[in-house]
Image (cartoon, rainbow, N blue to C red; front, side, top):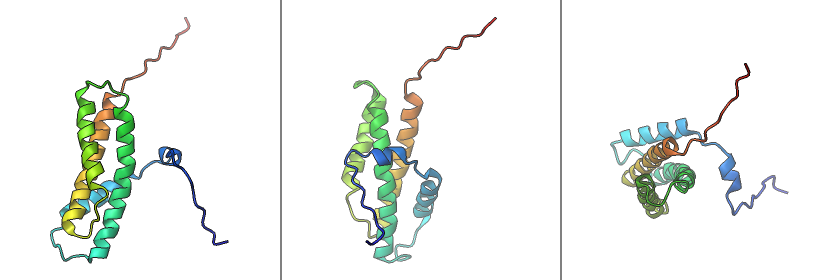
Length: 134
């Protein structure tokens, strides 16, 4: 036995229960967007940063999909979410072996978090009533 466990989770239930480390991801995004020298890292290193950003973006995109699915079909916020998700679907599979591509993934992750925040603010609030005894 090698000590590794393979998880089979086709419905994504494990991902739904694991919180993202948003602060770390936002720091990585800021750092990547501040880079200006394309030769600062080797292509393999850029690819590793791209994989980190892609993994986070996949998870945030799943949250955006879930929140957008709660809104009516004719809601403009849902339409904007679907546009951002379409961009994510087309960009996430691309390899990131250059500064340009890593920056694109960083911008995409930032856009997904922004859309998620807007959707969470727009989510229907469940009203609760409390009884106060006299």
